[in-house]
Image (cartoon, rainbow, N blue to C red; front, side):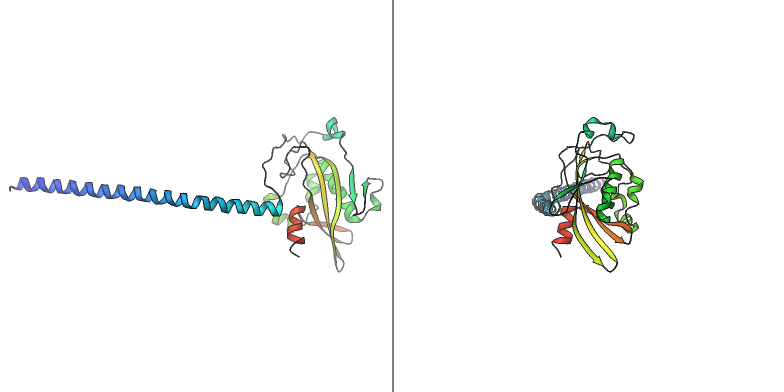
Length: 236
């Protein structure tokens, strides 16, 4: 065999070797995709089942997680110029466990300080007084709330409004009332409440956890009533 023949044989061997290596590489890549595909097919139902259980657990605690539609925000719009809103029942009622009374500016002084405080908070929401609203919370709450706190909101078309004292405790000279606030929002813009859509019948009570020392009243926490009952009532 000549040197030329040996060279040709070597080239053919190298080509065959490269073909085998290429074939092996292709098989490995295909095998990896097959493994990932099988893993996805196996784990996907498990993950879906886990997510479904997680969602069901959340719903049992705090209520269903829906998607919402909001009205277009207009920070210059005066809601008191809207006849549709002015026709609503805009009075603030207080339920004392036995009956319901209507709070007004004229009779406000006959109610407990915490009820007077929350009546004024409701007026802040209606009038879109977000700077004043921020001042009612403790610095610690605002720090923990972070981006979840609504820094600015439009005037809120609140109606069917009701306050109720759902909890009350005394620690020395500090009083800690918990006030439930229920209302509906006509044409909700989502700038204050993102858990209610613009459906006029949407309704989800929230609680303000207060701390009172003398005449000083601050909000230490705020959350849906359903969450409060689960976290603070059921687990105590």
